[in-house]
Length: 402
Image (cartoon, rainbow, N blue to C red):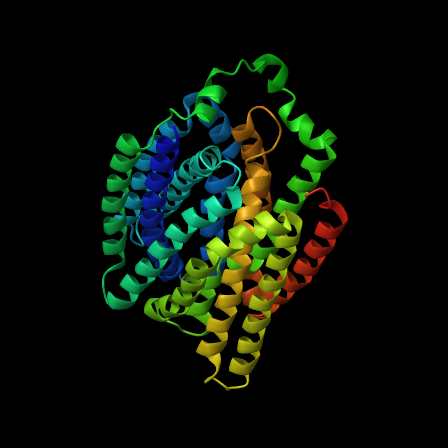
């Protein structure tokens, strides 16, 4: 049985390399791609928010589907949905904007179907070292991200649709890996699939649990607050780099690659730190590094506004390194907490949190676009920095049990 766990984790790690490569390419090019079609950061923010709606709001249904069909089957289902989104984007132009909206929506729905089940499979196959195992798996993801960013840099001048087609081919390979090399035969997964859950009693109580249970309520509020606060700045971040600094996609990749290198190097140590320090302290450290990322972005923008342009790239790189440290500390704590909500129907509980987080994320792209276009480029960063201070206070007050 131990060999099955190792086989599952190895297969998941390989799929994470594929994700890292494809998503890194996509994240760099898709906001400038949308901006080039819409000619507006405001409308770009709206479309980004639509994608995020599909990434988060279906989560309770996705969680319920996962509990019923199994994590492997739902993983397989994610692949055609994901491919459909990318295929739609291949045929997008200014005359068929509905395909742009549909493609972005399906792309993020595919991510949703995939990610929740991958996280649970890691949890179920990890034993007592969940922080370390999440670190190992996400290290694979960041290795792929480095390769994806490097490919964008090397492929300067390639048509955007080429990247979409390449990602489609890679996702097809991933589907084959999931089908043949991931097993549902570990003891933990068997126990869950055979467990007699009182569905009628539990069905109406899922949302009530988050209202009545102090721990679950605090978790729901924090992760929703977190995605809202960060989303105000990050929802259209790459579009802003392109619009405000006139950075090209290969220049953005050359900055982001430093973040992914840092992610790769420190993800495993961060998993160990989470196992040793505990989830609350790791989250607080994560918030401090996140604050540093926005501080560097504010400094870069102020200098740029005063025609001091030389430090721009170094400041953005240092900021992304700090952001990477924030990410690697956040991921293990987040996933350990969210994959262990309650005794039964854990995937659906995870989905409920993601659903509410999605509601929190919906307006962020619109808010960010309005602030940039009507106040200043740094306004979202200032607002997010203030919000991070509130998050740290919330963790200290309500997360002592973690």
